[in-house]
Image (cartoon, rainbow, N blue to C red; front, side):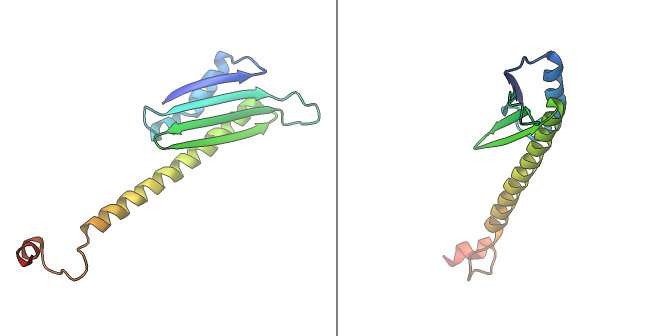
Length: 126
């Protein structure tokens, strides 16, 4: 999985990049190596809002895009929250795909209605 880290209204340090990489190791094991994760870290400059440290993640997979956005007082806490949220979404997506694949495989092995004999007898009957 490729990880891109961008900062808006704040510089992205090596420590933040390392934190993002470490937190998303669990997700990277579950997705393809071709997946692209974009993490955008930003700071709102609104004094009325105490949750001004925002982390947004967009994970581009084959055929689907997963997103998470969290805000808190600490940027590392926001990163932790979005990594947990994306891990949940990836797990749900994988389970859904696996269920569809298993259902399709089970439907392919079931004989059409009215034919109870094996494939050789069915071919001979036609």
